[in-house]
Length: 263
Image (tube, rainbow, N blue to C red; front, side, top):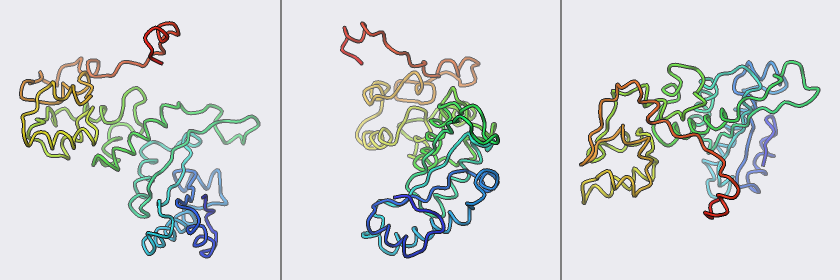
């Protein structure tokens, strides 16, 4: 259920009893953005609503908004950078214990306010923000690490791989010895893969084929890890970004898909 910032505490209490998740939408990433495009809404109002919801959830976790709270943020309607967007999201996660921040790419309409851009942002930008958000929440990254060289995330490469290429001295990582927080920074390793590796290496030595069986994309990952039978070349080679960059997805031909059964 959507919660309007400024609604009474009684209404918030009632909403939390009937809805299993509440959302007080922040809409724009900074106070300056709100003042420019939505002056009737303030960051203080939004955060007051979030704080009220968070307190009630903490007091009544089994009966009030049991699935927590979320918010939504429009991206690309203002010049705010990805660094600013992630900083706001991280702050909201920390202060109000949000379950999710949803990022929605701005979509222009005819006869819109002239202060709004005429072009929509690349849809890939929304995707990269979701990836960066996931890295901050579940992989131990800090938001500022992902935008240390450029305030906007790269569109042609995922933020984890981009970070690895900027921090080559961190690699290669020995999958048979490295701690969980180190393994989580390896491109191509998800949280489930890391959990499986930590369990498996108690009884055996991990080899490259083991990673392949786990579904690890070796083209992306092999340069960044050491296994019992794999010792990669130096990571200072100039063609490394090209070697590890995933291939662009391609739409399969209709008749090829029909013959192979793949859609």
